[in-house]
Length: 304
Image (cartoon, rainbow, N blue to C red):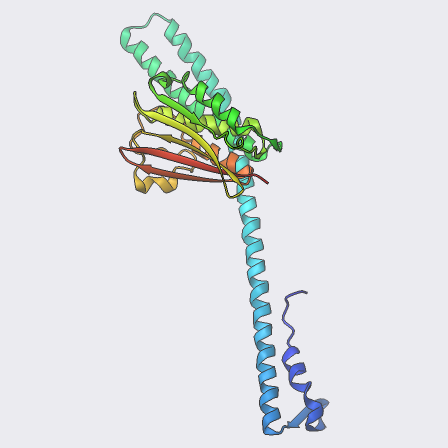
């Protein structure tokens, strides 16, 4: 086996110099005893060779162990991801019908002759059910992104950014934001990274929707793109409320929402979905934020 221990290596190294020494062998009870007498200089050389052989064996063992550990970790990570996807699919399947039935029941109650307090309660129940519907829908999208085959064609990111920027004005409260799109066209147009245009549009839409949702009237939202070290970089920046520093490491996790935005409707899956899309394209995500000043989300997509 490649990388396995060969216990005879030191012996071979030592005995390889045996031709220059005198040796006496004797058979004792069926075992061979080898006595070797060395000249001092030769003895040092032989011992050095033996030590070197042992060192080589140790390095081989260590390399093999590290390779095996990496393989086990990779296998465990793949199994954990697959189990996670199965859980998301089961969750969607188990919740879809009950949530539909609850919404129908609430609608029937709202149509009945209820007093003002009862109608308010029914409306609040319907709002919470809708929130659960959005969460299960977004989790279903997340599982599908990680499972479905992905196209790899040149994606016109400049056009996608323009379209997403225009659509942002139609989002709830979007018309109260100043939205700009900056894409270079001089001295050449923005390069087109290989990928799936629909998935990248979904990721960009989620980023812009977050920027609109977590900023106030009159805030600015900037969409910009440029090339950097064989990558296309896309940034979505806003002058919204920002994210506390201790919460930044967790924003990419599923169902995680900031402590200061709990009263704003959302599923907590948007950034996890963005990261899943970018990862499928071999890219990276980064976020920077200052509370009270705003947030910048950057994605880097390889051009090859």
